Length: 206
Image (cartoon, rainbow, N blue to C red; front, side):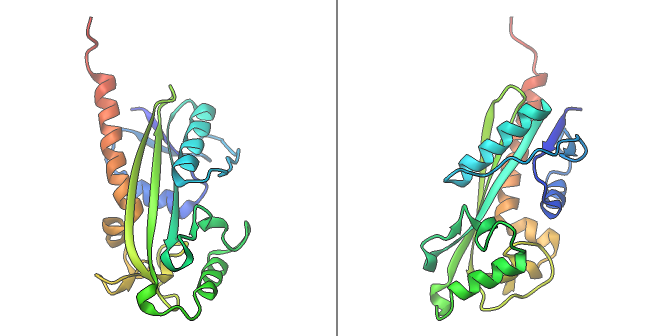
């Protein structure tokens, strides 16, 4: 069975992907398991650029099929911020709590009806030969006035889903994976991974 490298140092994200990708025809491995400690930056102007950059870099380092992603929160009242800068919005070393606090401060005085937002995720899957497939997912919601819930990570405690009357951090992992931007992108990624194995195993035409 070929290996698929999860190119993330975020343990919570790695756990989510391990669940989302259960049953794929790959052995899922992490950077740590492969002895890879290099950090690949995210200098791109878009989620697509960053995901592709990371996937290509770690595929080159590992010579494995590699899955990398970039995701971001887009808040309409802030002109789409933090977007590609979501993880660094309050500073490169800021904690999740500090990022949430900074975002809520930026939204002070903004009424509920203008607090629309979305999570976006772009997954890049790269083969050892450098072939790339992009898979995307998007989840619409609102920015709550305060944090609620203890599950998830990042901005999940303030991302409110009107249809479920809960924040993302109040959902179980199974519920979150059904509706989240990462869950949607991962379901498309599963199709790509199954297709890649089928193509590799198909008889070659003379």
